[in-house]
Image 1: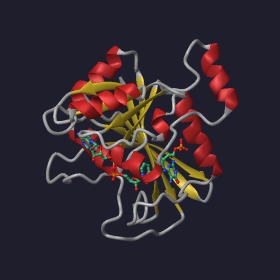
Image 2: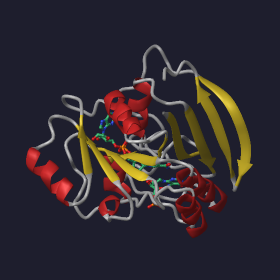
Image 3: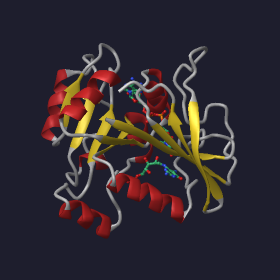
Length: 224
Ligand SMILES: NC(=O)c1ccc[n+]([C@@H]2O[C@H](COP(=O)([O-])OP(=O)(O)OC[C@H]3O[C@@H](n4cnc5c(N)ncnc54)[C@H](O)[C@@H]3O)[C@@H](O)[C@H]2O)c1
Ligand SMILES: Nc1nc(=O)c(N)c(NC[C@H](O)[C@H](O)[C@H](O)COP(=O)(O)O)[nH]1
């Protein structure tokens, strides 16, 4: 499986405001690039923090791109994947609106009645990990379901968790022309932070885009 993390951050490295309110950091060209990346992926993943903050749809916006997917025999939209250890996804979240397949990745601590509620709402539930989702195991299961290219759209907790497990192959970050500030505002990689064995990156691209810059890296030492 090829795992691509994509995010937009302010010039000071924040993914959103300290109130976790989503504000546009990307401009139209970057949003269009993100839409193409979704269209090129088998699944798009976020953490439940992003579902609660933004209620994203995670679908492909451009009808031509959806049509191109169906012409090559894929569903119009990639599958949606939410890492949600204890099931905080609301049953009326957009990711459960039926416009794409949705996998809910939960831990063994997830309450059984919540699992049933999510399945009734149309989600496929995959459980692994005692207290929080065991990302290595669930990504292997998703690969078994045919997910070869996984795009991860955040947020900072999930991105850190994936780096922690050595699961990221590629990182693309749009750095936009804003300062958001806030010591508690989400950043690209939050979690507990590394104190050693820092993941190392190889810069593969620098491109001026909208009023910002798109940086792409490949990740050293990723084990398949
Ligand atoms: N600018 C961008 O590109 C962008 C993209 C996505 C989200 N965001 C912002 O990020 C914020 C949400 O990010 P966040 O960090 O609060 O939440 P998140 O989206 O990273 O979700 C975190 C949740 O993921 C789940 N999870 C399960 N297993 C995990 C594991 N092994 N490791 C880590 N997480 C695991 C947990 O339930 C955890 O609470 C929002 O403010 C949103 O607007 C910005
Ligand atoms: N690429 C990007 N640039 C931004 O400036 C910005 N604020 C986000 N934020 C990601 C966001 O937190 C959501 O998760 C989805 O981008 C929303 O997805 P939908 O359009 O609803 O499908 N992402």
